[in-house]
Image (tube, rainbow, N blue to C red; front, side, top):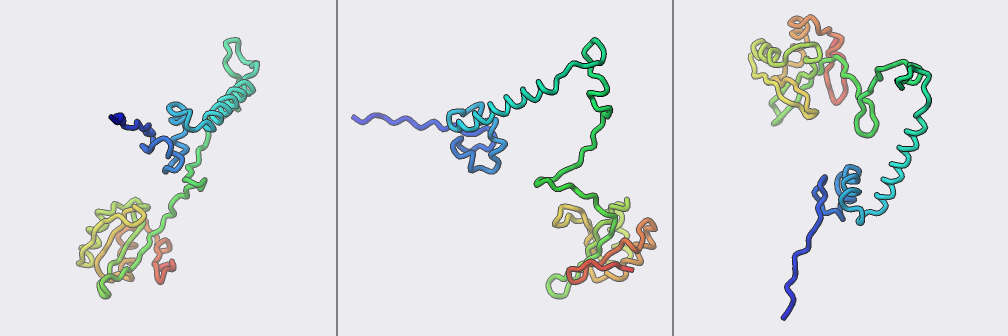
Length: 198
């Protein structure tokens, strides 16, 4: 009689939920490394060596940074050791090491044609001047007697979509209604190029 086969027990990663043997091909192997060192050290012996080397480097760095302080007898570090500054400026960095830029205060107006004859005027950037987009869309809808709504654009930022081709009339309306928005900070997008409205 043939032996009854038992099912194979597979160890799944607690981070990416792939089998542990396939973690290196997964979406983020660097996040899986600590879990693999703890739970599956026999699968990736190189990771275990790397973790031990890092631990040894951390210990040696800590030992080098410890010194005899000339401060108080209680072991508190003196102001010379702390560097004199307690606050560090942290720059927000995006993946890839790029620094996040602040948005410039500008209103961008763009006309989009759909179905060959229907136009939508898109207004972006009013919120940077402290204007509530819901109030602005109501005012635009009443002024031009069209439908206007606040929607999320392709960059996940909110924008106002106004039905109809009002691209040139809207500049005067924006500067009259909200004096905080100067005309020099209003731009059109024509043929893929940014052109100043004034």
